[in-house]
Image: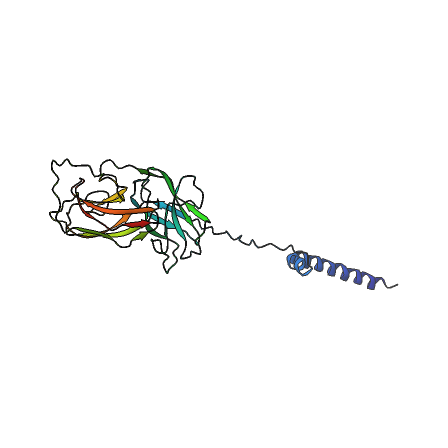
Length: 275
């Protein structure tokens, strides 16, 4: 036995052990990764939020006179088609029971060439007072994607032509004429109406839609020649053109031009068939 060698060896081992322990203590984080003991930290991934497009349909007023028109705005129509359409319905009516309609691509009863996801059109309302609503439907079908608030059709009291008593009506010799842009129209549709030759016109001269043979005040809808609406304008016109709404009931009708809020007729159109 060599006691000197044994003591030296023991001292060397103790020194080496102390150095290794110090190194491990100083570099434990690196050694834990190298050794595979580090815990991975998850990276949060954002969850996609679905984009939901909601179509809307709004009229320019909640009330309208019988046979009148309102501007109607639509928006938010995803993947629109040229045959998307807006219909006027009695509240609670079935999807196929529309009373009048326009295509969103044209604002008329004939489809346009460009599909629109938003826009404004003019819609004609029924001549019968009551509660109605607008519905926006897909591609010539009855897949409804929007419904308006309720719209009240009222009987006008201020703009309705009122009879003016005439002691002895004077026959009109005249030259006044009135004609429609077509001899047929879809139920609830509109036609352009042209009049001319009205001598000494007034702002309350008016054109009415009448069933054939109806009394002079048996009109179903009307406009004033001075404005093209059921309210008089500020300028009397001897000639002009305006849009005229026709009834929702099929039949044969005619147009009559009458004087100054009265029943003195100065012109009658050819017959017009509502189909």
